[in-house]
Length: 337
Image 1 (cartoon, rainbow, N blue to C red):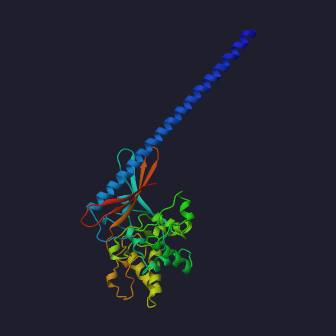
Image 2: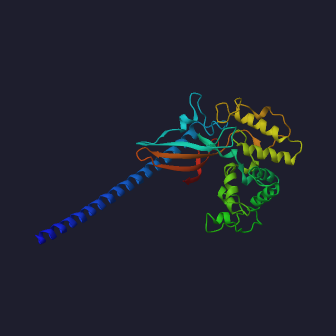
């Protein structure tokens, strides 16, 4: 009887061990299946984002805009459609789609929100077109975001100096927080907005506040050109304040009021169908800042989100597209988030 009891106990232990082994193998198999599904979802969502970008390039070539506004940048939108109709769901094949949207803030009186469509890159301040004659615009933007006039001037001039022949290597901790190495002085135009983090005096806090109002894209041969129909409140205010600083005859409040009126249309709201209906042509103000103009831009930013329906996995691509009249649209910057 004792032997039978020992055998029974041993059998029970063997069964327990085998059960644990089977459970462990099953759990591992489930994890591997989950990883495969996640990986497949990532591939599908990435492919959907790529398809979205191809669709955008096709739209830019087939229906380019003649005038860019906050409501419609880059392409012409039919009266029967809205930006969401075009960019809210781009079919990308089996169980996947893409949407094009960007975070909008500092426009009209609206709270921060997501907008469908392309973002006009030339509605921002091109730091490569900032020099000693107009650094006050960059300084004004820095002051809007909390710097004193003296510190704003100092940092604006440091940003200009960093691209000059006399620039010296810096030891900026803000950049070192993101990268173990330091950039050498540019001695040429900025190629990426994140290079501002290498400028002495720039901090991550300041950079995060101003990065959405700055760009490195645009034709600098015509000087600083900002599309007032797509510029944010901060950009318009910075240009107006700088103009008033340089010329006491300029009324900054009047410039801002007129610019908002032209940009937002009769309803006074950004991102509506009547955006840009007003015209700068009828503005006879001799003191109007030359940097603020209307027209068609050549650089657009697209934030494309690819979605896999099965897993809910998302992939985000942030690209800048150069689209000049008469030429095929091409990607000049590519970033995967």
